[in-house]
Image 1 (cartoon, rainbow, N blue to C red):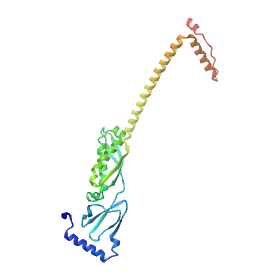
Image 2 (tube, helix red, strand yellow; image 1 turned 180 degrees about the vertical axis):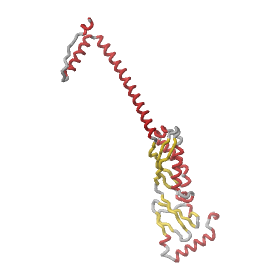
Image 3 (cartoon, rainbow, N blue to C red; image 1 turned 90 degrees about the vertical axis):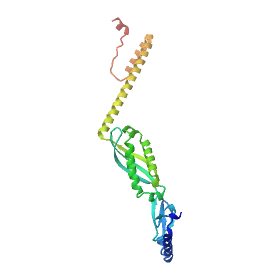
Image 4 (cartoon, rainbow, N blue to C red; image 1 turned 90 degrees about the horizontal axis):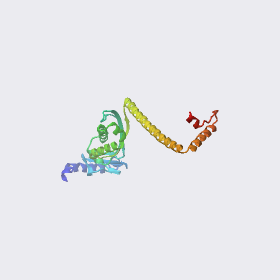
Length: 258
């Protein structure tokens, strides 16, 4: 499209730039040749316009003096630490939550042309999104559903930073801090729940033991000889221990007559 070209004056300046390079060759070649690393891309501006509407590199690129400028963009994954944020949860519990965001630039042209400082903007957006999302969750949901909350934050950040050429790879919630008084209240509540559960288990055990004793007594009542054998077995158990206990057998019939 001619309307997007650099115009006649632009081509004249570019021609003079080429001529200058040829006149000062080979000295000028050291200032015109730039090396772009494997993990970098270069966005070249010629007379203020992005050249070819795409990034260049890796390898060697040619920069004309006086007319061309370039900006290097690092495509490696960036780690963004979110400092602790003061958040009031849905159930009015003050908490401090921090996290980490992993992102990378997938479009160097968008990262340079669409926003002033892509890294600062992503950092501030991550802080704001973290506060907004966690403010709609209760404390129990925050403690139990960290993964789901992290995925929702990642989806929101990825959608918002798409026009900046950013791809959010991962979001993690590192730590959730609650007031000491709330920690003590939660610990007391958990202890009370454990004690109640222990009492229920003990009561179930007593009930099962009483049922077993009832069945045993019914079996022994049907056989008097079995009761006598059980009595003798108990005496054998007591005699096996090293003690000074003296056992005097007393027939049950004497007690019944009394």
